[in-house]
Image 1: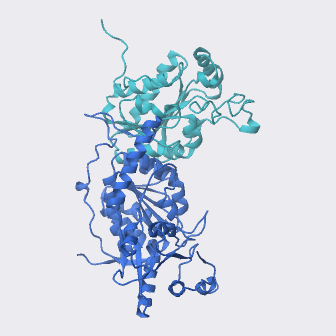
Image 2 (image 1 turned 45 degrees about the vertical axis):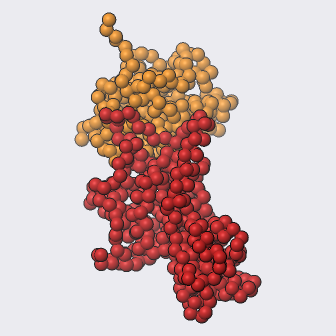
Length: 369
Length: 247
């Protein structure tokens, strides 16, 4: 095991991608993810790779389409408004079944919003975002180390299913410096064969990358084939962690940066005698319903905490299926929930008090559901 | 008996969906003949756009990718950067290249992408049923300029070859026409040049082909060919707008 290196999240993500065999990066500047393209522009040429700064996110994602269709291990990165621009391309990539990785170091929206950490792109990431019936595999890392580990996994999973994979980080994961150990990753020699890629038809029949099927019967069959693939992904690729499964009765539910804060809250409250646990989804799609099954028999309630006005909480409710109450607490626009505010909300939930917003927010904005 | 006119190897044996009298058939054939003559069928990757040529991949027997509307130059960039030794061409109409994909084509040229672009200019949106294009002529009636394109309302036709010739990264920009056999022969020469440039690594090449749309122009094929000569060429003069020196 090599020594940990102290690295900024964005740079570590870029380095992990290169170690995973990614040799092509197409992107456009946007805060707070600029260190990813900057790192790639310097490092990719050193390993025989190619970095292209595109004229827009629209062009970036279509360059990714072309490179992925040509058989390359390829990625792009952006932040919320830029990811919105990529949604058209992502729909085509999903329809044409091309493997690639998209990193969203998300920021506050809607519109131009702000540049501070946010989790308000959960719906866009997990529910499609572009047009048509499709799914993107979405990972929500809670540390720089986990972001790096998932980066390597993301490329493999993308190739395995011929499907786009998104790393949904936030400004905190991208900008924070943490110790990281690079592990896993593939040399270029061990990447999977892609006999479907457009490489020139010398010695074989012509290959075609497309998402157009004008015959309704053909498109219907294609969509159900995709659906079967998504089902397999739901069966095989779910990742999550349950903390204090042994005796917890009240569960915090959070992913990414917020999960880190919730771990501190959980530890503090346990010292004070509250039987608090935490469910931390790592795959946001497929959503880890199994985690909720695991604790269903004794869970008295769930408090979902997000940096949004409440998005993942809808999936939590679907997973809990009414077996216990589901509560919510959130901050938005770049505001990060304070541990003491989460603790106060959790105490109110456990002790059955109506929430008073100002108690959690110390006079600032924010909300509960 | 010796056959003198055969289907190019790089075309499939598929009946096209193009309307009678449409010049897509001619331009497909010219591109396929050039691919055959240069012996590059096995290393050519085409990029189809959105418009009537969305199904170009059914007719060319080469590897193909189908791109989103206007994005063919970006997709081609992705392919060419992965396979710099392969030959990559896009085949785009005027709505695709001059309207929704204006940014992509300009920046592909600016980056000096070593690709070949075949640009079909028929001054109208064919696939969607005859709407106004950026290249629609002044006074031309379309389904979205029912009183004729009027510059005070819809502006002027966009001359893409002239525009792209002003971009430093563009190596070769030519406009040809398909309205008679002499011009068809010239067009083939330009197309061949554009592919040869790529084989020699000279950067961005585009050949604009003035083409017909008898169906949406509401003309017979013969009248449509005459209309190209009489009305399009005065607005879109033929010739080589840029021919780079060797590097």
